Each structure stands twice: as C-alpha cells, then as structure tokens.
Image (tube, rainbow, N blue to C red; front, side, top):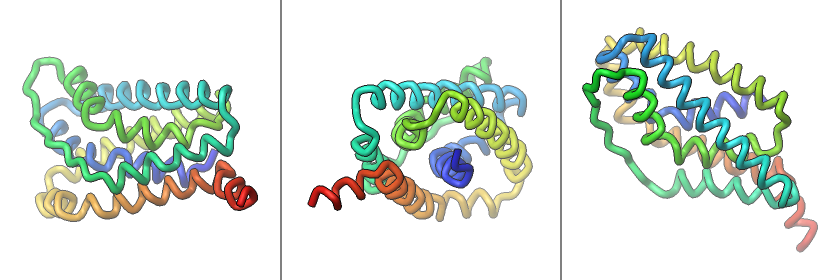
Amino acid sequence: MNLTLITITFLTVNLDFFVILLFLCQHFALRDVLIGYLMGLLILMTGAFLIGQTLQHFLPEWLLGLLGLIPIWTALHDRDEEFQISTQRRPILTTLLTYLSVCAGCNLSLFLPVLANQSWITFSLTIVYIGLLTILIVFLINWIRQFQPVQSLIRRWGEPPMKICYIGIGIYVLFDSGLVHHLITFI
C-alpha cells in the first residue's frame, strides 16, 4: 500500500467536498456529518475496488494502466459543480447524498486505477487509513470553518492544485501499471 499515493488521492478527490464540509459542519452536528461522509467514502471506495477487481480478472495489469487516463481527463475536463445546502431533517442522509452526488465521479475515476491491483487485505487497510484521514479532516474543517480568510482562500485557489494532483495520479498509474514500459517495448 502506497500511503503517499492514497493520501494524495484522498485529498485531491475530496478537495471540492472540503469546502462543502465547511457548510455542512455549520448546519449539522459534527457526528452526523462525519457518519454521512464515512458512509459515502465506504460506498465509493468499495465500488471502485470491486470494479477494479472485476477488470483485473479480464484484462492484463499493463492494460489496466489505461485507467490512469481517467484522472488526467478529469483534470483537463472542467466541470465545476455548484452546491446548495439542503436543510432536511436528516443530516446523515443529507451529507451522504451530497457526498455521493458531488464526488462519485471523481472518487470512482481516481480510486479505481489506484485500487485495481490491490489485495483484499491491502484494500481493508486502505479503508481503515482513509477512515482515519476522514475523521481527522472533518475535525480540522470543523475547527477552521470559523475563519473567513481560510474559506476565501480555498474558494479562490483550490482548483488548480487539485487538477495538478489529478494529472500526477494519472501519470503514476500509467507508469506503475507497466503500461508505459509495455508501449515502449512494443514500439
């Protein structure tokens, strides 16, 4: 398990949602936001892992490297999602559905290539690690949500570094899978 890659992937995939978390933490109890967020991550990461495992049985590892093009395409294809806070009475469900609607595509496209070649044990450790990161992030965001300059900075400069990370993750997958080596050998 490459902790650096997992950490960077988690942070970049969820960067958009961190801003939304600022709003969710202002409207709902911290516990409810945390539970909804953890449930969303578990659903999307499990989905990405299972899709990757299925593809791995039908395709050679080097060909799975083509999945690295997905994060690169995501970074280059500008799709800004607008967010509107829902004031439903079910904060856990609101957080879960908000997370799934905003982050499903990015999570699946970035975690799929990262998790495709992992074992069940490594995936389980990754889930635990991501869970701990999630708890840390939610508490941190809950703390910084009260600082207006931080909110303005994230809104203004958050997207370019996120796109650079997406491209970096995609390039890593292209090389790590052996795709680039296979193509160079083929030529």
